[in-house]
Structure formats: structure tokens, C-alpha cells
Image (cartoon, rainbow, N blue to C red):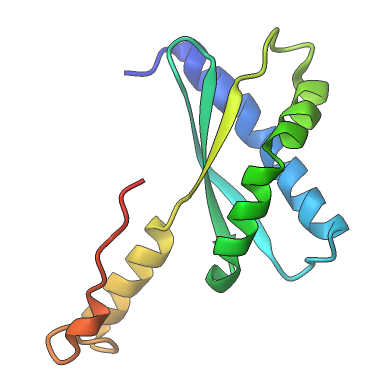
Length: 130
């Protein structure tokens, strides 16, 4: 169960991370990429924030998440500049792909009969645990 403090900090981080990541994508020339922060979970001791990202188009998500992970210290520094009056210490950031929207989309396609896993068992790739 998350405390109110954890929720507040997660909310602050989520809002600023969206700005930072979208800005970085734009300045990197990626104008047709949408990066959204779907969820932020902060540990009880407020030392680690798990950041879940949804990246569109999906085929860019692997390379972008690698770039984001390798730039985590820079992202944390930028975040610290933005939240210095709200937080004493910025938590370490761990980034994960949130594939739930893609997963739901695949279920909807299956329900509409577009992708039939009974006729094509290859459609049933195992869902990754994060």
C-alpha cells in the first residue's frame, strides 16, 4: 500500500519526466515519437522510482528505452533541477516499458477476429514480466 507521500512524489516525478523525455526526443530529432509516462512507483524509503513508459510507435520502444536507461543519470540531474524546491533528494530512476496498451490492443484485435490465436498459435507470444 502506497503512502500519500509516495503518491505525491510519484505524481510530481511523473509530470516532470513527461516534459523531460518528450523534450529530449524532440531535441534529438524524434518528432514522430510519443513517450508517455504511464506510471511511477516510489519505494517506501523514497530511494528508487520505477518509471513505466509507453512509447509510440511500438517498434521504436526497444532502442529508445535503452537510450533512456543509459541517460538515466542525466535525466535524474534534469529532474533534480526541476523539483529542487519540492524534494530534498531525487530517487534513483529505473525505467521499464509498459506494454499494457499494446497487450490490450492485441486482445481487442483477437476479440474482433482480426488475429485468431486458435488458427495461428504464433500470435500467443508469452507476455513479459516487468
